[in-house]
Image 1 (tube, rainbow, N blue to C red):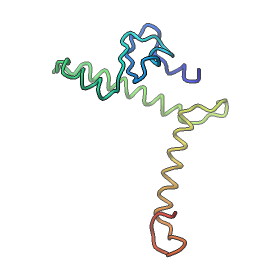
Image 2 (cartoon, rainbow, N blue to C red; image 1 turned 45 degrees about the vertical axis):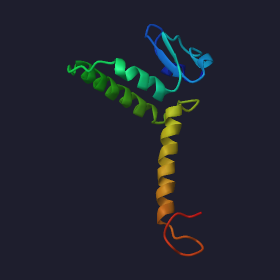
Image 3 (cartoon, helix red, strand yellow; image 1 turned 120 degrees about the vertical axis):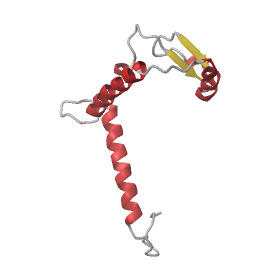
Image 4 (tube, rainbow, N blue to C red; image 1 turned 180 degrees about the vertical axis):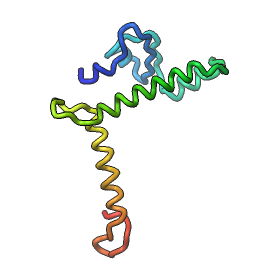
Length: 120
């Protein structure tokens, strides 16, 4: 399985939402299986949540996000010993390439009429 490093540890409770119930739990154990769309599921769950004023959880989550983001950014950097290439690196390169080609297309003159804009 190609994305095994990204799966949560076995002791972490997992909730999974899927339109097709038979897809739930295929790759990791699921404690809370929910069949439906994410929009419908979130809409049904939101009224059950209570707002909390303490910021401790949000602060911990923000610190965790920054650590994870830094690791993902590190994965986007290619290393000579990486074989096969890490998916995060491929996605980062593709995104950069798409941005570059889109911006260069916008500045080129159209080959048939000479106007500036997107080429066909």
